Amino acid sequence: MENLAMHISNGIINGPVAALFAVIALAALALAVHRGRQDLDDRLAPMAGLVAAFIFAVQMLNFPIFTAGVSGHLLGGALAAMLVGPWVGALCIAVVLVVQALVFGDGGVAMLGLSITNMGVIAVAVAYLLIALLLRVLPRTPAGLAVTAFVAALVSVVVAAMGFVLQYWLGGTADLGGNLAGLAGTMAVSHLFIGIGEGLITATTVVTVAKVRPDLVYALRARKPVSPASVPAVGGVR
Image 1 (cartoon, rainbow, N blue to C red):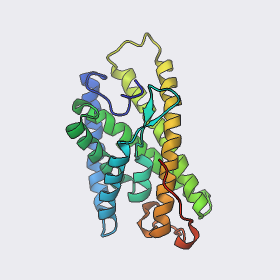
Image 2 (image 1 turned 90 degrees about the horizontal axis):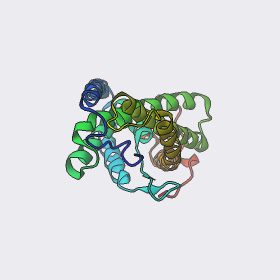
Image 3 (image 1 turned 60 degrees about the vertical axis):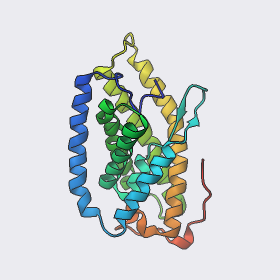
């Protein structure tokens, strides 16, 4: 179940619930398109393409969690929210999920509304709310930016996983024998570890971009930016 939870396969959730969340996802993406147009400029447009391509590539790399049967990968909600904002970020995640489902069979096409809601709407929204809050209280230093990215990524992954638990409660096709709490606990623990990995990748990427071009970090716009000279070079994280 942990391997299927975020890229949901066809048949995991019943048709009516999948259709309901398809409508929710379409409504959220329509709002993102409308609001995202106001953000797009000569910096954000190419950055959005780079963010989508990066998330697509990194999602192909799985890292093992505490058992051989469970692995995780970057969801990308916090990374997209920090670099291109919540509206364009949601669209980037949605494009990645659609391509993965149609071209690589990663997640069912009929379940796209569920996956987009979890990873493209819930994860991005939660991440950006935390980013907006943390950047108000943390110091404008590389460490503050890294902590913001890490916490936003970690929390958004776990909350997105709980979105799947809600969906399964509404329309899961397998009988859990009333053990929904067990499913929620398993999802929370496994995605806590996934969130730690995602937090490290997100913090490293955002701080590195801020070092070179702080004006390309959406979360720092209209705020006092991190000085490029003050941000240390950071190596990559696998």
